[in-house]
Image (cartoon, rainbow, N blue to C red; front, side, top):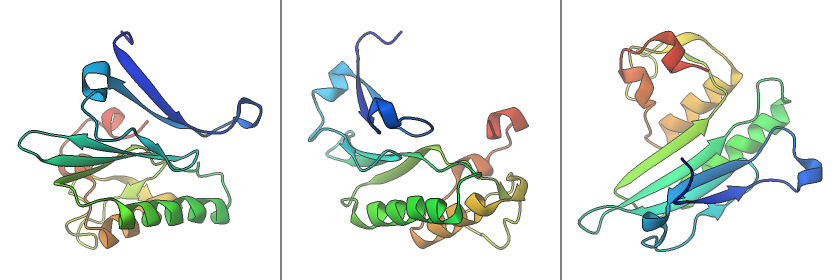
Length: 156
């Protein structure tokens, strides 16, 4: 259930809400150990500095990318904000970007070596290319493409 969790949300006022908003649900015992509360960047990005064992930290970015039907300018604005966030995230031991990135990254793992694994899905769309470029620039990998998963577990 949801009891025992605290929700942190970043989005638009109710009257403007349509297809955006991002949140973290964090167990209350973990909330008490956070060095600072999760930061809402905009209605599509949040960041969290999570303490791990042995004085290590994970930086977690919650992301909800613009849908494929959005204009190129809207998609680019999201990725510009993500780039800025990735460039300014404090030094951490682990960096995780999670959420709904509305992207199909394709299967060309030879071109995107170290970013895209051998188990990508379908053709690459505009959001997929933006995601691949962002991952390459910030030394991130698309972890679910490195494991053999059923198609329904790779895409929603």
